Length: 238
Image (cartoon, rainbow, N blue to C red; front, side, top):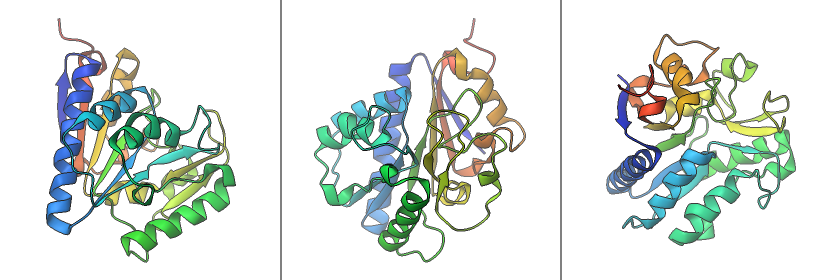
């Protein structure tokens, strides 16, 4: 069953989300000696990362991955890596060896091949890597990572772990994304949403699973959703 938490405003969402991330990573490291988290881009995750960098968190043994990336260089303004680097990775002082960047500048095919190989090599999985936590936003159309409504990528049932996208309906068209099986295999997914523009998407995500709403295909028993009042289905309470 999906765990849905509502907060009064975006700052409260970010605070609740950052605290959940700390707990999840600390628990994973206590159990297995290391922890693996994948990050997404976007305004709401960015605020969460800023607060996360201020937490009293021991980052030793924590590996940072990415849920998706545009096919741009790491310094490009559209790069998810750049957002994470400026808001979390740099301020928290993570070592380069702990950060696993999607090389979007290599293009969708080569970038996906290399990221799949890196996931399998570091996580020791010959097929489907299992991350401890994946942080996701949600688009107004219900997309997560770079998995868009009705995309053929949603019907991939096994490897590869990372997929190259050449025809994204949202610019830029070329992207890299973790596959839906990897999102579903994760020990936990955290989805955060703020603002009235996300209310319909959140409502559709909580309804019946459908390829028209990729977020609805996540494993609900492993999914935590944190939204503000404006993103709550039905709008802010009166």
